[in-house]
Length: 76
Image 1 (tube, rainbow, N blue to C red):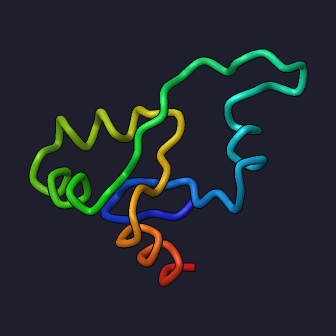
Image 2 (cartoon, rainbow, N blue to C red):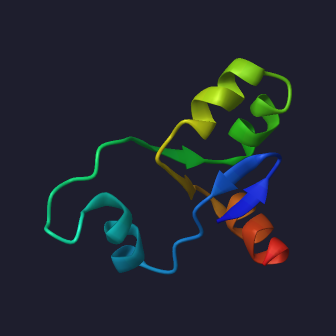
């Protein structure tokens, strides 16, 4: 996981790594929800704690858009 503005984001290498977060070793679905993180959401969470808490409660937070991908690469 990599943090941007207090939000842990899963920088998945590929679809197989992402699927391991969704399915257990026995093939059942792991409960939770996923949210796509984009620059607009990062800007909003900086001034809205309720929104930040909702995003942080997601089981999977993944990059949506080149801006977030670029930021994750820069931090790693």
